[in-house]
Image (cartoon, rainbow, N blue to C red; front, side, top):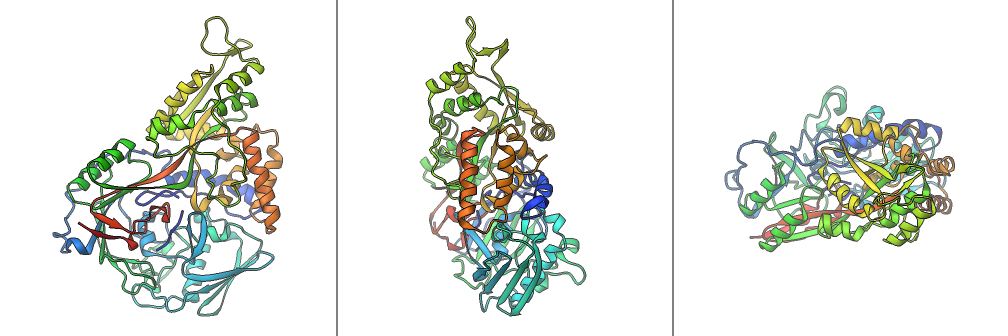
Length: 564
């Protein structure tokens, strides 16, 4: 089963937009990045989904399968049609059915349908050696020809997959034999392997899944035939999807014969279903609260947790009237008590973060010492910059202007308001007034892109998007990620270095680039890292083999064994 790193089992992972791997083309097209990513992650949409009436879910017995044969998990959303070449299905379900050439685990590219691969010295040729004897769930053979057919079908719709930087770099595909696939590129593309770790669309659909005319993107798939551990057996929209073990699977087969995903949008309803024995497992990174997690644990349920590669950051507008001052930004770094935030907001389940990127993201852990909580230093920096208390004021002023900073947030994402309230209290202790401003999703994104904000909270994309796709967005003039950095003293040079990372083949130079990038983020105090997003799992029975660290958009349910 694919083990990829961005949102987690049973939630949607992000999608971003970049259509070239380096140079001017990347800079021009990367401006689409954030809008596409927001669509995929649900940014701007309600984070807390309301419960909906879908009728009672069938028990295992009603479905005709015994308890020991079926693992029942909670799905926050309907799985969709499982067309791997479109963006309409849930990634966790696509991950159960389909596989790609490679996968990602804990930030590392690992083999999947390709046992190994070579990259030419100039970075323009990728040669994949495919596993022998692999079959699709219908018994047909997986080989280089069907791999080529899938990739070319995706390439024909590159505009619809703008988050895949590699599609415009691939110039031709060769199949010297059934087990060898060669991708020729017009220019080096450092994101290529990352692009193949997504749950879609560069995964392998069997011949039987292709329509008689056209391709799955235009005309849909006739059948969700993949090489993964599971095969879709039964599906009732908005109620459940029943998957059966793929007996043709090339690796170790799941211990369960059936996997049932029951749609329960509301997390509290899911907890009730777990208590009633209607589901066996629920996994989430946004809806399960610390209170629920600990209450269920105290009630005798088993729990598990694992950090993801997504980091919650306070983004500071470097071009703002007040936040454009470096000492103001530095003061905010020192005034942020991350430990208190972690405990107060998340009960310690989301640990404090140290940098914009997770330490598991390649090249980004450069050894820079993070800012520590130091109120005295924050006060001193503000005093040195002329921000002083006047009379009995509790808010600092300079030249008749109050030290007020607006934190804008998407009104549908209630946790950002709660985080904002904690930060508001912390910053008040050094004379900064943080105004918490809820905004409609569309207005919020418009103001972000336009630079009409002081600070905002946003989680790094993590997983397969890091680091290259994020850098492309940051370097694209007009993108909201670019806007955050616009006031940096070295922004022009930073953009050049970030774009160079997309196609740089010299490892030493690449690391030098990242050293410069991370130092720039730190020295210019652009981001205040808050907490590491953590996956939380709650389950009943004696479950072994549950690996929450296996990926952010899926869990390795194929390795799970369970007893009542």
